[in-house]
Amino acid sequence: MPFFYYDPTYILLIPAILLALYAQAKVQSTYARYSRVLSRRGITGAQVAAELLRSKGLYDVKIEPIRGRLTDHYDPRTKTLRLSEQIYGSTSLAALGIAAHEVGHAFQHADEYGPLKLRNAIVPVANIGSNLAIPLLLLGLVLSLPGLAAAGVLAFSLAVLFQLITLPVEYNASNRALEVLETGGYLNRDEIGSTRKVLNAAALTYVAATIMAVMQLLRLMLLSGMLGNRRRN
Image (cartoon, rainbow, N blue to C red):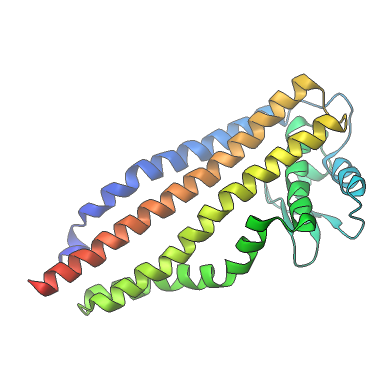
């Protein structure tokens, strides 16, 4: 099977891998820089999250600390906003920006923001598609069954769709965060610029993940097509 000894389609992934490495390095360096810059108001990530939620009338959203580095997230199933320990108790510009970003997701949930509802709805099928895609494709290649390989490609396309929907969800949450931090007086104008850099660096990781998923889909489509051509010949 030439697919397993030499696969020229791997070259498609190289630019995406390089971008992913750059994005990871960028978010780490930007976070490290602005986690050392304290906000003038001296409010912590947990405190700003609580105040922003109250300003929206969202009294049923819980705020909890969670272990890990940059593990912050909002869980719409339980209406729980979880902040990593270094964000929860920190007064840095990075902490306030990340906390407000997660509050932005809570705002989206309360507003029934369309892309967020769609993303939450396809999570189960996207997970199934992601888990089945490669096994189906490999079986199709090994057994020379183009239909099975095509099913693997279709399954992976569900995971790509999830990534594509994630982009507007994350950018919208960041835009909401920056707006409420500035209009609410939590950050001064010059502090907003620094916080924007943190959120933009984080958003780049989602861009890189999406490009990686799209390029992987193209690669799988090529492999499936190569198998179909070989069967016809």
